[in-house]
Image 1 (spheres, rainbow, N blue to C red):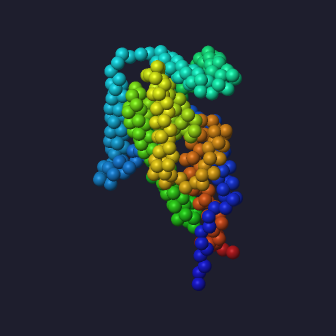
Image 2: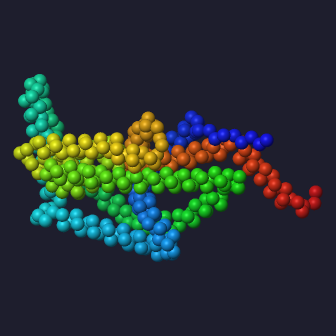
Image 3: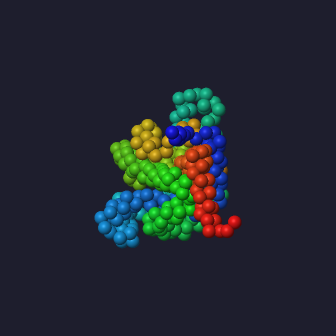
Length: 375
């Protein structure tokens, strides 16, 4: 009778290695951020265009022709969306500097009016001069923001723009040579571990596939619902605002706060004498975030990464500390992939039967290699 041990779940040693490997990869990612950003966009585009490309290949289209067809269709759709977005507002054009200044002024005025309203409702806040303190702090920050931060941010963004051109280049080779790369990795694995390695490659691919496709679906849902809510309360450019806020939400916590601030600035600028519009915009944003956390995310991202919520929250904070905004954005998919790799490697190392098969294969190869040698 042959005894085959059952598979065990990953223990504390394996999980310690998973967390340590994730932190090390995040540190390396921070040092190579100019490559990490286009690599991320390349992977997102790869998982968007992979399903239609595979359908074309099954229909008998060659690989290169299928890639060019899907890529051309994607660029055409993107061009149509950009043209529609540019023609959405038929009003007179305004320089982006003036527009940014107008929205910032509208947001600051909303903050001042809110502080004054709080002082009228709560006299104790008036005694501590809440409105005056907040106004002085905000004025000191905005007065030095352009000189200290805005120029540096614009220079950093300009430095990243050329590297973004790598994204379509990477996507093309991911689509064309992805299967070849998997075969290359599989050939380097000993025969005893071959089946487990195939499962490993499949699980890594499926984890990343589900995560990034779920991220795209979540972005579409957030954009549609937020745009509908902003349109209902009369905020200008609801579709653009919804899309920007949904993309910013890719960065946990920080992105949602920035998206809410952007929506409030636009709403308060559109109706400077009616703060209820800004309050309604905040309510719409909170409602969308609740739908996102309890409905949309479980239907999309929640099915892709099976990670305990405690580990998820801790890794988000660790990712932000180790690699900044990029760490916040990439820590969850990176943890998901490392988790699959670590758990599978842990099973390979602790599986006594696989190790015995590997030792037996080495012994047979040595015996076959020395069969014609004279002792």
